[in-house]
Length: 203
Image (cartoon, rainbow, N blue to C red; front, side, top):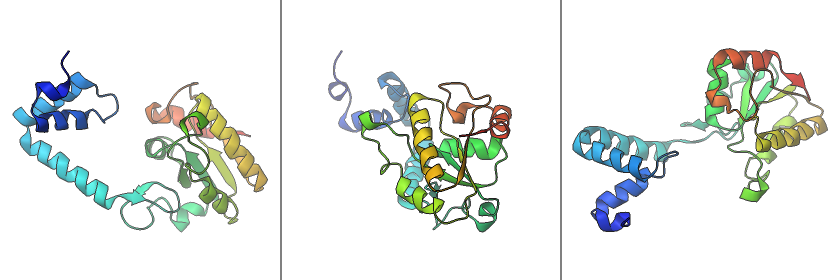
């Protein structure tokens, strides 16, 4: 098979290669997307491009929970949410949204933006655990709920987090009930997440 660069014009090649950066998108899918946008939906393509540039320029991480936000602190870090004394630690923004909409949790969050994986160069620094450590020492957290995914790396991360919480004298629990081993929280239905929270166990 000829390389992409020799089959298409430079700009089309660049577009196809850019679309391949999306998760789960291979060469054929990227090609179909590029042709669709160019042939049938150029206005939509412009909106995508403008929205992407706007998001990259205007969206940042909340300095407290590391969720994406646009102005200062996000709306998940309010004093009202801290009043219950619960902090839920999740791997990514999609997990936060799944729990927020499916489990009815109304405490505060901390988003790791990953999981411990030494082979991939992901350690405590990459997950912002120094910031989490500071928050554990502030006194308002009465229970840290660990909601990392049920994967090997997720379980290893949960163990590390549990040790951090215990060292700070904070009660720690782990959601487990109903979440399958190897499952990703963002794909778990709301009912299962509700049971996972209500059936969480102390670590």
